[in-house]
Length: 328
Ligand code: PMV
Image (cartoon, protein in one colour):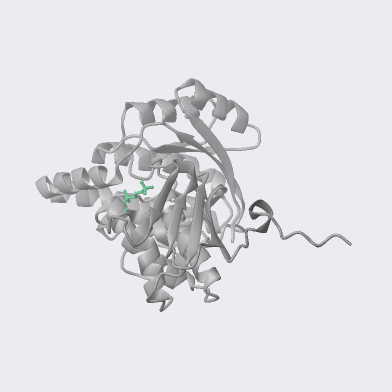
């Protein structure tokens, strides 16, 4: 009888742990949320980050492989401020592992980078979840969110905490800075077209500009933030009451307020106008603005026409997503 051949490397890669996290979209309240007003965000499950932990050679330490970017980082020699390195080190500390285990963590993501869909937060969350899984110590959403928040500081400077919350809790989130995130119910599902302007939006800069604007004219900015806060409360009630079709005008109004704050741009305004003309119930920028994403309220009847109009008006990508509260 022929001896049994050992498995080849290709077939024998053992998986020690897995983790994943969805993208996210801010529905209402961005920027104002930095100043203590409420905001609403939901997970976007069509796009996600995934991480897999494989064994590395004994003594190799922890290797981080950003597969989409062709980047391979050895934790020991990597720059201390690299976001993946910060995420990995915080996770090791949370898991009580003082020495780097011989792991190769391979990370992939289908979330567009710097497009306001939470790619940075999702990559950190997937990495931390996979490491926790490999260590046999699952992390609570709160512990995971605390790790991801620390990494978000590198991306954003002074993040409100909404991105890490929605990505780690994987539920619709009503968020107030400094408070534990609350979930809210989706009374009736609704559909959004999410259009990417293709303009990478540095959140840190938009947030810093808003801060400068508010320093110049606090009364005006605080009044704008208060109007946004009032919309957020109205929207939350409408979503919970199952009348999401009433959201459209509130999206338009929130977009107009964000324009006044100075974070829209011609690309976003063009997309918003195109979506409305093609039959969207309403449209607004989502996230930091100055590029990034626009969201438009669509129905089964209007989603194709609105998606085509958004592409024709310059969107490089359009994702249609249904918000139904069953993401987790
Ligand atoms: O660009 P995004 O989707 O990560 O959103 C930033 C949201 C802001 O309110 C502008 C900043 C923050 O930290 O909440």
